[in-house]
Length: 389
Ligand code: 9MR
Image (cartoon, rainbow, N blue to C red; front, side, top):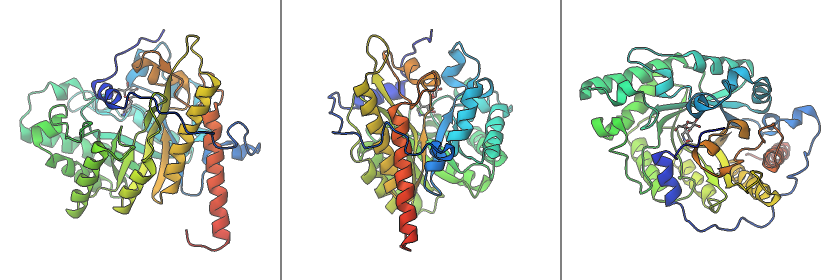
């Protein structure tokens, strides 16, 4: 049995601050959800269905909540899982393996094993990697959170960490989530929760980007958060901050929306418009942690209608990203319910990913594939006509 854990403070707030009214899902799901458009093995893969330069990614299960489950490490032990990971995706994000508590468990000691293994796997499978994450209020090791450090020492600790971790993978990470979840739902900086901002002031955020850029000038550096899919107080706060930082010449390259969605709430209808406003600032955008959870019926199995509605959410999130010019990275937070964080954190909810625990594809998987395939065909047609894209 999986132990049910209480939702983390941050996500509890997020869940509570969402509208409590269930907005009906949009009418009909897009066509082609059930049937794979191509039986050809190559086009049976999300990564091959994607337009050129568009990366389809997944979180790589390991660390975090997995450590409390009764299965061995998924990435190293589950052959079927690994096979699909290499076959279906062109981008991978370590779910926990690059977080502070995992990679820097003791002061002065790094543990790069799991992160190295993912980066090597990605190279062998011609995948890019999204690094996650460098400055966050959560999953920090005890030695850091409970340590008695002066401001100068803390600053040096962060600088050294960023330089070491980003430097180690320089040239191998496409995008880094440099700053994760720095604002609360009202759009205020998490000045209490976030040790860096609390102790060193908001200016440390710009420094984190500068240090990451020095360590790997090619990596694209992102702000990443949840509940910023729509245009709202929180995404407005990012908009203002990134505008200021860009004006100051701080190397910020992207804004990404995690997209932990739920059928309890309506689809974030202004997603595309929101991504577009960041795009217009000259930033890249990305969807980095998409999943769509639902309240499960008593038998634990989602209904057909729920699966259809879920497919619709997945498809709409992907379409929003595809429609925005510099949104070229679309990542789901795990591809199988077998390893999803959702049932562990939300009692009674689950089925949030695109495959069942037995790797059976859900309508959401087919929706992603056919949407990618349609976008690829449309692009090829445009190219043939010689139109500028
Ligand atoms: O999926 C991650 C899970 O294994 C961890 O236990 C959890 C701890 O907070 O973090 C999960 O990933 C989070 C991600 O790093 C940041 N955005 C929210 C994700 C879901 O909580």
